[in-house]
Image (cartoon, rainbow, N blue to C red; front, side, top):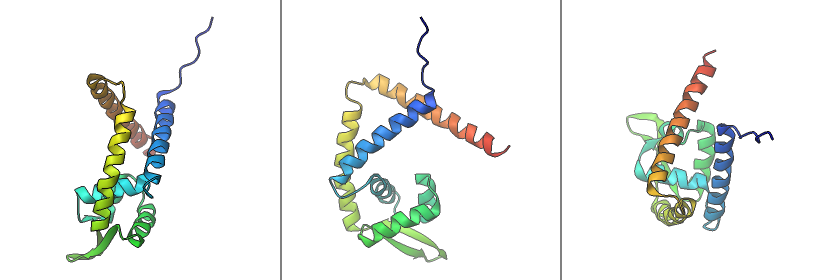
Amino acid sequence: MEQPEIDRIGREVALAAKVVRRAAETALAAHDSSLTDWIVLNVVCRCPGFIQRQLAEAMQIEGPTLTRHLDRMESRALIERSRDPSDRRMLRVTATRKGEALRAELAVVMDALDDRLVEGVTTSSLATFRAVLARIASNAAEAGDEGSST
């Protein structure tokens, strides 16, 4: 009897990422927020004054996509953008007090989600998983770099 074909690792990672993202979006929606809000607030609270380009790089998204997110978050008074005094072309992004408060609220939600995600997984297995996932991401980045130079 023939063994069933095992899915490609890239597909398994992509499908797992979709399920985790959906769970995060559902949990955050209960707080009138989104995964993008969480990621932006988390970065700007940890690195206040990041310029938009740095923030886009940290989030691995394109500048125009980030700008739309920031416009929406600024209209909700979660972040502020200000011109850099040494280079007026650069916009620095900081969280407002309301943004900082929302980040703290969302951190509790994301901590609870993390706890659910790793339920039944040993500390040792989780450390191995993180190392393997980092290696897969590194290999994927290298494969992407090689593909773009041909």
